[in-house]
Image 1: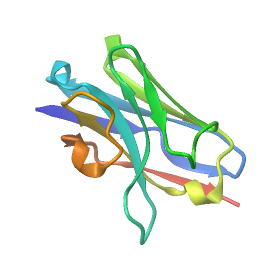
Image 2: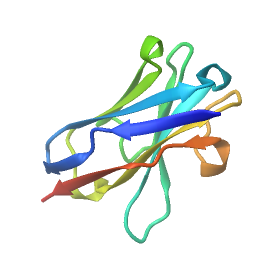
Image 3: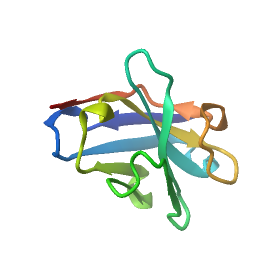
Image 4: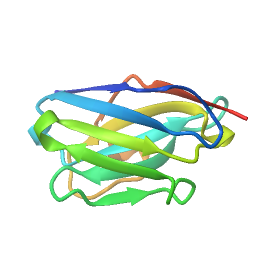
Length: 124
């Protein structure tokens, strides 16, 4: 089993920045990549981006490309989501998720473990 805990959410003004963390524990060696998703009120959970533990290859949704950056610290089993130039439409609960299989998945079903989420609110 793998446990994931997100932190770093909060309230920020439009144009501002926030950095989220996702700390993994348990059998982290069994996971291949970590993804970030978000879910706004009344909307489906959507892919934000992901990173492969080994090599650090990343992938991003078009809506955040150029504004968000995912990085990882393997020694700390932690993945970060740096969010810049935030917009009100970025308001959502942000989740990290870990995947056991090769490749980067952009769908919810491609991930095996989920964190509890952290709220990000961007005011206009």
